[in-house]
Image 1 (cartoon, rainbow, N blue to C red):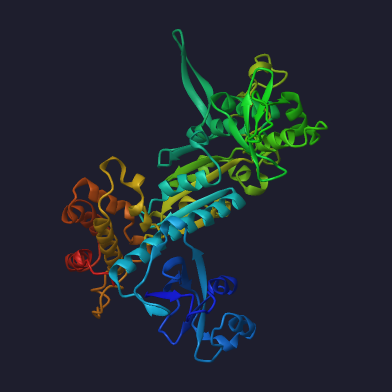
Image 2: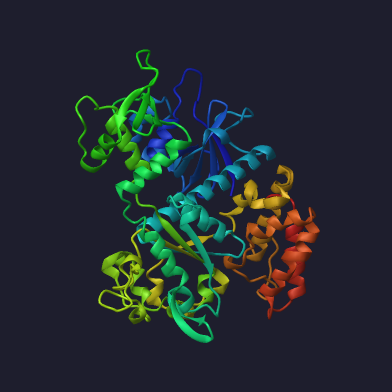
Length: 527
């Protein structure tokens, strides 16, 4: 993989052609040795504003006739020698853009600092891409499993994905499966109770069923609860709301009788304009507004609908999902967790359904009636994220009927290297210097290349190759342990070496292979 810089202006007075690249998803290669998989830093003037990855072999621009007029408009040579390549282009957020004044036009990046900047951008972008792609899969399927090498931060990533779809700390729950975990822990079961000197048993909800009961309260929020939450926030401070008719904003405050509206106009009364509670409620419920209040009433109503009257997603995270016997843990729920059977249409009779009091039973209490007394179902606002390590994957632990109910997303060690750049990932020990992080990334890359026998030029026989796959590459979470010692060799001795020995258990020439892996780890030159 190589890194190139592409400037979007070829000569004084010529127009900048950045928008051309974005419109056609291409980069201009001309006669430079740019190949599929290489990254291109795109510059406007002296500032890098976008990053592209080449997704095809390069080819003459003349083979794309629709480009002839566009090239002419931007004063770019439309000739056979001027090669282009298809590319995925990401615009860089303003805070990550940087200056590049060394060379103009197209060039391969040789400067180490610029290379490190590009690598950093790749990690930031890839991390966001993973979250956005996983978010899309989760919203479409309701269930997703994140698979990948150990230490790639899948659990941490699961929480970020949950937050990305709008879940909060209160609407995220995490459990970890293990061989002893069963249906009674997850769905429901009998638990011992003591009344006086008598020992008995009582049906109790499992963690997932209890979670679904809580989620059900927010599956279809009502106007009363939405307005109550809005008023609670207004009591803390005024809220600035954008007018639905223009780009102007006004401030809303709360009184005992109504809303008070304050604008920046000179004719606004000192104590503001009045807007009745009932008027806003009427707009939310019917879409109608009182004549003469066509600005404030609908604007507040739309704000409440957008920010308070929406379904709150609840995300249930199952760490190490394949370590439990999933078919036994979920039981009949394998039907109701299907995305097509979310909600009441996926209602099932659970194993202890007959112990739940319902209408007509002597012990039925209508005030405390169980919402699932007529059968259990998974609310439409409940999402499930599972995590598992590739090397622990076992088809036997998750049957195909269950597997097809989940979307699957692979998380590679390389794609999650950006964890090393995140302050919160380092915890209380604190993030080390940029120089240390850069060296950690290089060591990680070289070690992982060696694990899959793609490090160095030495020709090795089959018995001398490490012989592992991407599933055994070491994730960034292991390299975060550097903060425990601030020493690279202690990180190797205390965490990496033992893991690699375990990977290679039963293979020939283990000591020689460990030594080769150690040498790769100690190589601080980026390749």
